[in-house]
Length: 367
View (cartoon, rainbow, N blue to C red):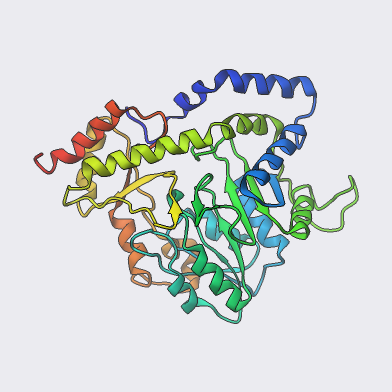
């Protein structure tokens, strides 16, 4: 089987460094929010050019804690995309606010600033753009809208560590940003993990308190918090992978160019288009086709893993039926849910394997 992502190959490539880091953690006797976490926070903050990075238990918690630290809750609205992983909207609901959806751009698949503007109301407090599949959202337009309407911008950068927009790193473009370190992410660990980045010291202080049961002094609590801390072992793994992330992301970009080179002339396939203002890091390589089911079946029969991202838009999820959205409300997102499919994309995919994938997709064209 040629996998969508091959974690075994990835972690085998840095196994010795990871084992060394784990041994250092074991010998230290500090296993939660210790020196490795502090080192990781410092290196990520420096890399992104922000003042603060706060490590938490996962990417979903990163979104929840950021929203809560900003005081967003019952009666507030937060605008986001209906074409993303559920956590982007789930976090809004978790703090008691209401997710308001805006349709996406048909080329980038990211939230459409023009539709954001149409959805802003007196109750709107923030915008959560998602840098989907590793492609940065149109942050210049989104930031301009936010400034005009006195709104917060919280980047959902969970799929986009290492990408940039207008030569600025994703994670430094909004008031705050949230990353996931789930194993399949470009920068991932052997479990769950996440981090929040910001240059707002007041926000960072609130999040640090929230992640540790609402306290800065053990056994003394002045608010209800969470248990959302990053373990030292995960930080040790992430420090190893952080040193490799630029090399791995560049390999993804090379593979993406190769897919386009060999499949760009296939009439029933539409390749992802990279924004002229952004550096895409291809967390996923998704292409569109009206013949999706047929192509996916052919790939699976050839022992090539494939997947659909995302088959059911958020506004049509059963849990959000009470919001009153209907089929047809977001035609672009809904169309993508019926046409997009992913093919293998990871830094350890060989050209031989990629040629097999390309050959299967071209067979349907008779070439």
